[in-house]
Amino acid sequence: MAISMVFIAFMIAISIISMSKFPFTEAGTSGFSIDLIHRDSPQSPSYNSSLVPLQRSINGLIRSYNRLNRFTTDYSKKSTGTDIISDNGEYLMKFYLGTPPVPILAIFDTGSDLIWTQCQPCIQCFKQKYPVFNPANSSTYEKLACGSSSCKAFPDSTCDKNNKTCLYSQYYADGSFTNGVIVNETFTLGATKGRNISFSNAIIGCGVENDGIFNAGESGIAGFGIGNVSLISQLSSSVKRRFSYCLVSDSSEASNSGTLNFGKKVSGPRAVSTPMVLKTGSTFYYLTLEGISLGNKRLDFFDPSIMTNATKASKEGNMIIDSGTTLTFLPTDLYSKLIKALERTIKLRRVNDPLIILDLCYYSKKYIKVPVITVHFKGADVKLKSENTFIELKKNVYCLAFGPAVEVGLFGNFAQRNFQVGYDLIKKTVSFKPTNCSRS
Image (cartoon, rainbow, N blue to C red; front, top):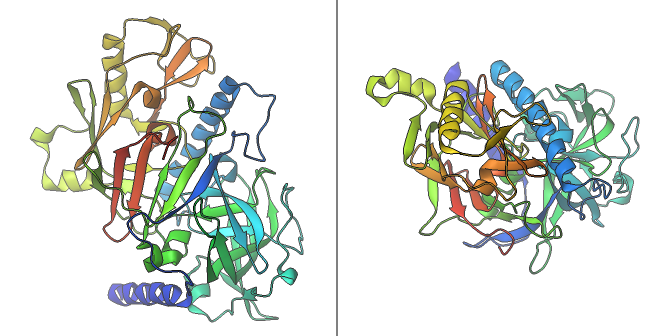
């Protein structure tokens, strides 16, 4: 029975890939890139000019804890990755939908699979600043039939018996929801260099009932998870199932955006790679965290001298890498070791976190300097600078941008800034390469 289910899942994946027709050639080693827009950037429709930079940092921390709760819930329930809290997304990407193409601004999310946007006629839609996509104006819009393999690939898809079309429903952990029709539509990406790149028969959720904690600056979500219906899986061999991103630091010019690359291989002398750990029923990218070093002092997640093969296997995939969370969350024991090591090392005046969220804060008139913190993933040592580890929450108050996680750790985007972070879904690896992302 188990073999049969695996075979069925494999055939569904092949069917989805074969349905997508790509009018562009395969990406080379450099691929093609589009902009990633931070939600607090002046380029974002969500930008609030009245907020000072410190307030934006504080808002990002609050969203991090909300998102951690979502991952904890999903982890315990072996979720399919659909219980996302959409207001937590930190980065937006623009694409175009339909013929003629209509601009869509969606949350870039490595923690989910479904690509969806609001569509007319709206039964219930949240306010958005871009016009809502109207399928009646597109010559390439096509609803999926109930019996199609693509429809069956969607978790919890249902059938509209009146017109025999495929429907989806997603209910999120925060009470938000999106319901609508699963469709084939032409999907276009605006490359930063060269011509726009389009492909037909993209599988999209067209939401006509959407409400909850959504922001007017976004129209939906672009899922980049490991599942078969995510955007990167649908692009498939055309980009060699590879994508990468480079996120700018807070110290960069406000006008700078990050970049999202399709097809690029992250390689070179300073690049390191760690294997993904696949977990049944989950779309998240799990990595294996073995320990952390503060300078030359290594803090192991577990004692290697007493590890058995069975214990090692149970520790595999103890960390999720996520684009939508600002903070990094460590397993509780390792987090406590890091806090104690930093307390012994940093000789500055301790102060309280103004939010009463973070545990380790210092007063300093200039950006705090600490020994390099090295995150030891399996087979890959990622060296973090001070700009990746301490965040300014108040004038002259810097706090460690880490927190404790009860169940599964989370490697957040603050630690990933000024790295090329590459995902290779064929080799099943995640790679890191130090990069000045404001110049990439």
